[in-house]
Amino acid sequence: MKQLLIETHLFTPGKLKLSEGLGKNKNLIVEGILATAEVENGNGRYYKKSLWERELDKYMESVNENRAMGELDHPDSQIINLKNVSHNIVKAWWDGNHIMGEIEILPTPSGNILKALIESNIAVGVSSRGMGSLEEKDDLMEVQDDFELLCWDFVSMPSNPGSWMNKKTSLREGKQPINITTYVNINKVITEILCANGQCPIV
Image (cartoon, rainbow, N blue to C red; front, top):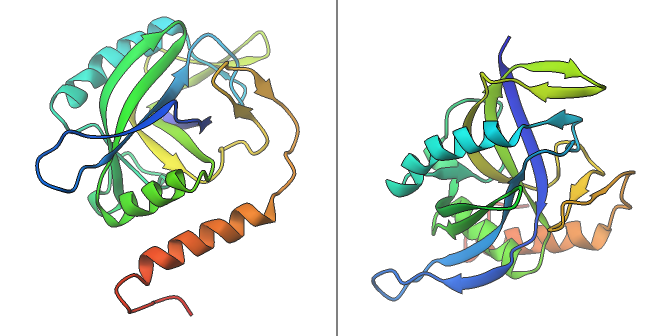
């Protein structure tokens, strides 16, 4: 039976740049790893490269039509909620077993929060959202051929806390110590954005 499959990795932007859009307001562009094939991920799931290749080929239609949007924090839903959209993937390609992406941060309320977090060096996760079924093989839960990629979202923490993936795809197991300063900084950034117009909804 198909279920909602969410896989999250620590997103480490390889570079930051401004888009060449029209007007004075140029959007921030970030680049990094979106997904990795042929490894056991933090949820104990395994994706064949051929499966990701098929889904990325299909997803490129959305990329080429400038509608490969994602949300800031993902719902348990198959639908992309436009009021929560924060970014749009403008390029995607393979680098070995990594799916790489160039992502435009949009000037939406959620996009402004995401931009401020990234520019403040706050660690965020990038999370694929898709529908598919699982089958246990050799102590792994292998994602089956009925898998359908929906989008990539940005989230605050991995869906499996403590399992982070860096740019070299090495997994660090075990719960990471909580850095309270990080959460204080996040709250400060969000408060500044929401209160920028003189009306602060946060008590």
